[in-house]
Length: 345
Ligand code: KG4
Ligand code: ZN
Image (tube, rainbow, N blue to C red; front, side, top):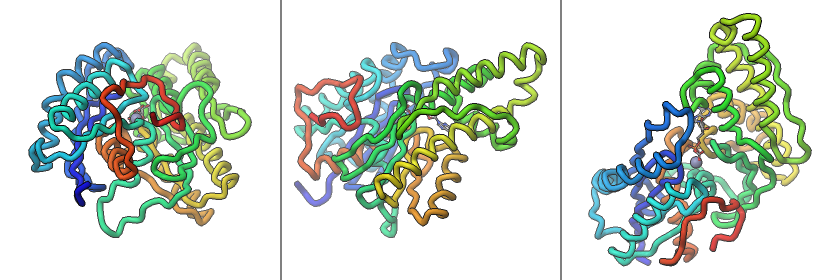
């Protein structure tokens, strides 16, 4: 392998078509086309996502190459999201990556989307940057996953706890939906909560043993609360929106962090990371910083641009996989469901 690796990465697991070029662990470009077509349905429509990926993938890849200032012929490897995600969406990215790698005769690297969210911490943006040391504990929170992951090395990760029903992002998105906010609702809840009192309303913290989570009861709790209040006061949601968002977000974030803290103590790790779309949440970020200051732990919070889905995180995972010689084969197929600590083959 040459000293410098120029790698193209492609992400297409859900509703973002993204391409990124990396030189080793540095990002030269990271283009993200967010699909707006789903907004009016209040959630991602898989069939529409696949079609939008088809429309976006060529221009997005072209833009990523041109922003990086390179020609496709200079690429040394191509990484792509093999799963988990929507099958039709994954097929677009994987077929594109496979064709391009075949044409260029370079290795094809299949990447696990949730592992990639964690590996985003290893993207080097300046030479003084501190990278997490192994092992560290990572709370990965997205629209589809909520997991506590003990990260032992770039390729060795163990799920020590996870949601038994809804994901944290889903709990925020569904709450936003019942309050009439646009999809995805997480960022709206975050924004509105800034002007609300987090202690004005109380919602029941779910009670699940160990390091697992559950969010479906909390969601139902909010649903019944809003239904009862609206029945006697038609303007309740509109008037109290900020306080409802702040109070609901308060319970979600406190709950996420309580288990993260307990798991870090149990596994005796002092380096704590956040990953996934919900790690963009301002309350979660500041609470984790405070917790780590109090405990003398080191917090790793991803830059905003690497929280939600992007191809740069696929690229950094691909780079570390390539270093370990973990490349794919031409017969690989997308994996719609794929446990984070399942087999890499
Ligand atoms: O990782 P991601 O982009 O896609 C998945 O792999 O699911 O995560 C998307 C999730 C959505 O549920 C979205 O509402 C949530 O991340 N999210 C946020 C914020 N930004 C995105 N949730 C709370 N606060 C935010 N600022
Ligand atoms: Zn994601």
